Each structure stands twice: as structure tokens, then as C-alpha cells.
Length: 116
Length: 109
Image 1 (cartoon, chains in turn blue, orange):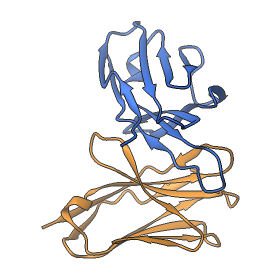
Image 2 (image 1 turned 135 degrees about the horizontal axis):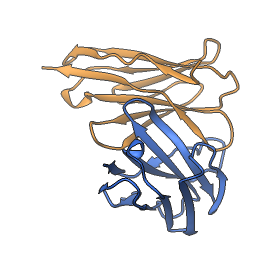
Image 3 (image 1 turned 90 degrees about the vertical axis):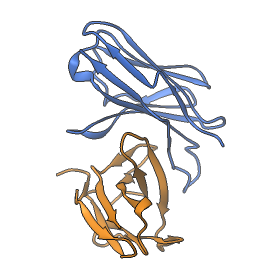
Image 4 (image 1 turned 45 degrees about the horizontal axis):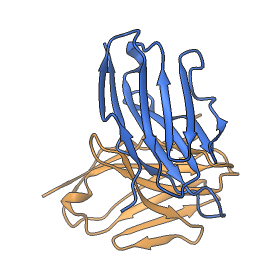
């Protein structure tokens, strides 16, 4: 059963610390997405990649957030320095991203981040 | 105006009942449509892709109305396990999905 995996599942950190979240997309999927979900804002797209190239990071605060795909099996999202308003659940999703009907995205279990 | 809007509910229905709800989207050029289900403190899980002709998967039926710019989800013979938040997602172009805030459904015994 192919799944998106994310680590860590939970992270509690103090304001000002660096946070790194990791995602392993489903093998063979070439589009990878980072979302943030909060009660107030719902599910927001932060950034996404296709074939490891960043296509859109307009949803991401540029001064503190960065997203990369060092290789096809790993995507990372970093926050430096973290702030209490970054507390949220961060989801990674992957998809095949090709073909007229094949834009389905599959989500990982998320990283629940609390910044104190 | 938000790109994708949903009635937050909650829709409280008895077991065995039928429940239906809609999701409206603002951009008439939207190309793909999806329903996701999200349980409390879990990730969204793809429930159905919505095709132009409408589609059915067991007790779930999805419809697309391009003229009025909405998609619908109907759940027949509701089960307790159907209690969840249902998110609709719309793709305008490229690969990005815009999600609604979700509709909460609670099925009671």
C-alpha cells in the first residue's frame, strides 16, 4: 500500500528555533506539495515541485520558510526562525501530475508543529 | 470572494439517511474537481474525483454542475463511519488544488 510518509509526526519547539520537516512521496509520483492547515485558515498551499523543480512557492513566507527536494524520494520544509504563529499541521502530498484526469493528490499523515 | 466555498455544517443525520451538500467555485475555467474526506486529526483522504458526467462509488455520488459552478456530494444510507469533514478541491490549471474549508457531517445512531 503506497503512502506518503512524513517525519516527525509531532514537533514542539521554542520560538526562534529551526524546524525541519521531511516527506517521502509515493514512489513514482513526480509532483510534491506542501500544505499548512489551521482552524482559522483551513488548508493552504505553501509550495509545490514537479520533477524536483520548484514551480510555485507563492504561498510561503519567504523570509523564514524554505522548501527543497534534494532527490526524488525526499522533500523538506524548513522554518528558520520559527514563530508561534507557525503552529499548525503541515501536510505533504504527492501526485502523478500528468494526463488530463490524473491530478489527484495523496496526503501524508502530517507534522503537527507547536511553537511556544 | 473565496475560490472554493462550502457550507461548514454541521449536517447531523440519523443512520440510514441520505445527506447531500454542495461546494461552489468562483472560476469558471476550473478543470478538475475532487472530494476528500478528513477525520479529526488525520490527513485528507481522496474520496472521489468528480467527472463531468457525474460518478458514483457505492453509497457516494458526486455531480458537477458547470453552469452554476458547483459540485455536490450525496451520501446514501449513511453509516456512523461516514462522520467526518468533507473537503472539496478544485484545480484551475497546472497542478495546484484549491480547497474549501470543509463540510462537517455527523451521523448519529
